[in-house]
Structure formats: structure tokens, C-alpha cells
Length: 596
Image (tube, rainbow, N blue to C red):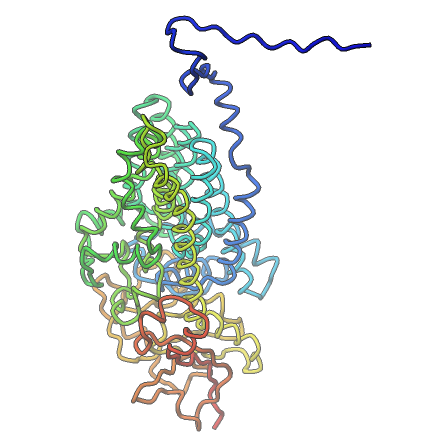
């Protein structure tokens, strides 16, 4: 049986141009895609598991290893929270009912976790501390995951992946994500509202932004203005009603809660705005910085990621079709926020005694993240803007009318993208390790107190010049009757324990003032009353109290980076071997008085 001969496929005929032997085909000849097809492809972006796993892992590391970067976090948030749960803790003048600058609504939001944790863990208050931190880390993971998924669905996997990498490893986000500060809460809100905006949920996005402003930090309203105005422009009635109802409900709740604790009708939100904006206080008392303060700080915590984020506007004309207007709306608060904050003469919205010590205790090049949390609300946006710039590198050389033009430059730009990203991530990771290894001693040294309960109830823990590194009463066991400050030359107003005999949270103690004038009640004059002593011993020509071995025995000592004697280029980043060899370290000590 023979097979039939093969038939040649007839050559297609052409019409029109006789010189054409075959029809031409280009991307323009593709049939138009339906909206349903676009929607299906959008949903093929990054799935939820990858960002949840990556962010969850890094935020858990932040929960367990993050240091406390600012004593404002301790005395204005951890201490009042400790008082709400255990009826003891330090009070600052901002919590005096005479001034009422602090919102108890924000504290109650965290008490929802801290109080049940205190029932579960009993006397182990350190675990309660980390339970609250874990709660903050979970919120950070959820909000950032939604942002990454929204970026993936809107702009593709590459931009979302770059953003995810920088959210995970940038020093700024690593530390800010688990800081107990209103600016961190505002950061969560800005992140979630940006994600909801990209997902097309405009009314919900503005409502979340409003909640972040009122519950968290009133000044963060600047970080959500572009998003709010654009959403109102798109869907005015729906967005306006949703945001107005949310704002009125939360403001009313804040007003009632402030009355419950301060025992007078007042609004901490309004008081804070009056103090800092209208002129109700003298914020210059606590130190000022120049206009480059935030630019330096942004670079310290994001290195070249921060520089690339600032270049987003320069890249926009090239990638305008790809990123405008939605992504521009999302990242524009970076410029608004930095410009506004740089024009302000002061650098802390509450301005406590921690600020007046800034020149001595703060090392902008190595020590604290963004020292007082001012840039926290826009931290995730910095990562997104930088990721967009890196992702657009090839667009600098691509010619849309001639795809083969500058082909090698386009390919080189594609190769440069992962290299630049890797350098940023390595530098960020190195800086994070430097901060954790160099400055974690204060948190760890207080944990040794639980092993020395043989001192008996009513013991007195004394702290001198290291008061600003006190990690909170959550690290002080119950057998320690009180924590007292020793006079080491500081002349500003220090926190003083809440006084239950004169009303607790409703009291207006006469020793508090908003002029940063020291009170006689803040110091313990009789050093012999101290059972324990915490101090930092550095290589200095003058002796410390703990140097007298006839009176004090060392219970624990941990290394602490001496920034004044350590070279900046070696202390800024953790470089194995060189970091240990080139830097100078002091000893952070817990001492016990030797009985006479």
C-alpha cells in the first residue's frame, strides 16, 4: 500500500503592495484584550504565601532582636502601658492631666494584647513585652503583604519582588516595624491605605488613613493627603461619607477615653496640635536640628535605596505611562513629608527630656534608626519608589519606535538591576547587624535581674546617666520595689512614677512642667539605699560608681559599642572580624551593693 504524495501548503497571496511576498506582523496586529483577560492576568501576580513567609520571618527577627532606639518609646508608651496593667510605671509631663498631650486610645489598642498576655504569663513581664512586640510585627506583616500583592497585581511581579526585598531587609523597616510608637502605627496605616488604593478600594483606603492619623500620629495627615485628594476626585460622595464617619467615630471615642483617664473633658489630639503647631508650647527647649537632618537620617537607614527613591520624580517622565498617576500618588508623600519636616525647627512632636540629650546619646551615623520615628510613616513608600526606579533602568535606553536601538545598553541595564538591588540589601543587612550587636546590651542586662531575687522584696534599682536607655518596667521583676534615678549631672525634667495617691492618670503633679526644668523629686539622694546599680563603663579618665569594688560586685556585664572612640566607617556596618577589631567597646554592667 503506497502513501499519497505530500501536498505543499499553498503560499499565501498578498494584496496591496506587490513587492511584499508575505504579510507583516507586529505587536500592533494583536487583537485587543478584553477587560476580563486583563483582570485574570493581573491576578497571576505574586501569591500571598511568599510575602507572608518572607516578611513574617524578618519581622519575627525584629521582634526578638530589635533594640529600643529612643527613650520616648519607653517613657511615653511602654511605661504608661505597664501602669495600666500593673499599676506602676513612670509618667512624663505629657501625661499630666494639666497638659494631656498623649492619647490613651492608642495605649488601649495595645492593652488588648498586653492584658491577656499578663494573665497567661503571670509574673514574667518580659514575655508580655515581647507579646506586644509580636502583635506589632504581625500588623506590619499583614499591611506590607497586602501592599506587595497589590503592587504585583497592578505593576507586575518584578516591581513587587524588588519592593518585597527592600521591605524585608532595609534597616529602617526592620526596626520601625516593631517599635511601640504612634509613627509606626501611622506607617501601618499609610502602607495599608496605599495597598487598598492600588486595589481600587478608594473609600476603605481613605478610612484606614483617617484611622492612622487620629489613633496614631496627627501629623501623618501629610502622608495621606495626595491619596485622599485623588480618591475624593475619583469618587467624592462615597469616599467623603466613609472618611467622615470613620473620623467622627474615632474622634468621639478618643474624646471619651481621654475624659475617662484624665478626668476632664479634653482632646489629646487637639492638645498635641496646639502645642506643636499653634504655639501652645516651647518645642525649641528640647533641641533643634538643621534642614539636612532628615536627608542624612534617610540615607543612614536606607543607604542608596533612599537616593533612588528621591530620584523617582526624575525617572517619571521616562516611565510615565507605566507609573502615572497611581504610583505617583502613592510615593509623592515622601517628598511632601521630608520637605515639611526639614522646614520645622524642632524634631520631635512631643519633645521630652530624651531630646535634650540628643547630642550626647544619639549617633546619627550608626546608633538609632530614625531617631525619633519622624520618617516612619513613609518608610515602606521609600522602598516602593526605589524599587520602581531600579525596575525602570532599561527604560532609560529603550527606544519605543526602534526596539533594536541601544540593544546592548538595555541588556546591560537589565543586568545592573539585580546588582544594584543586591548592594543595597547587603549594606542594609550589614547595618542592621551592626546596630543589634553594638547596642543591644541595655535590653539584655536587665533580664539578669530575674536571677537575683534573693535580694528580697523592696529592693531598689538605681540608674544614673543611663536612665535614657532604661528598657521599661517590663524588665524589672516584682521583687524590685522601685527604680530610682541618681543625679549624674542632668538638669532637665526626668520621668517620675505615676502617683496613685493624688489620682494616678487624672493627677496634675506640681513637679511637672513643659519648660524642661528639673524637679527635686526626680532624684534619689541617698545612694546607700540602692540595692542594684546599672551603669555603662567606658574607657574614660574618670571613675564610675561601680568602679569601687569595695561597695559593688558585678553580677553581669555585656559589651556596648563606644561610638566616640570607634571609627565611623567600621562602626556603621557589620564587617566580620574588622567590626570586632577596629571598634572600641565599653561594658554595660549590672552591679549589686556589697553588704557592709
